[in-house]
Image (tube, rainbow, N blue to C red; front, side, top):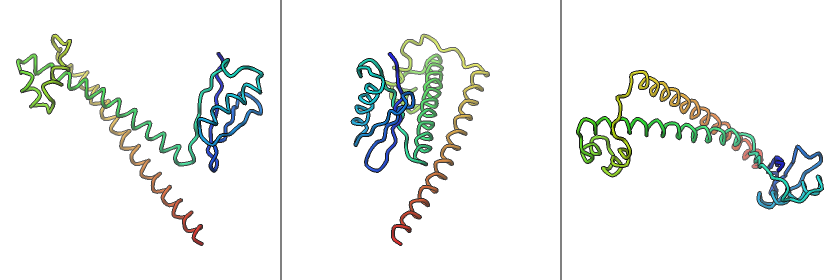
Length: 178
């Protein structure tokens, strides 16, 4: 099944749609859903095929600075997933090590700020946890430092974009008032 890319851009109160792979294939809709439906129909007419014989991959474009903010938000989400994975592995290692030293689940939970039920979940299927090697620990902290640096840079970029957007909106307000 062939897949076509539908590029959506907001203009006024409508979504304009362009399908670059099909020459002259353009349409619009009041909502994304209606624009997508119309894109299927436009492609079908242009290539002389039934709409169920191809697929559409949506490429929704945001205006100007908002596209960068969306990119930064996705970066932050990706970093959060990486940090969560790092956190889970580190907690599993810590809990496993304390368990290996004879700590019970309630004491371990109290010491690390988790419920004993969560400690039990972390220990499921773990017979013994080997010691965290120095290299592995260094890799964790190196990864953590890299991710933290990326978060700081993304935060700084988001602040600059927010300031630029605010300045643009202030300029627009001033021109509308005049």
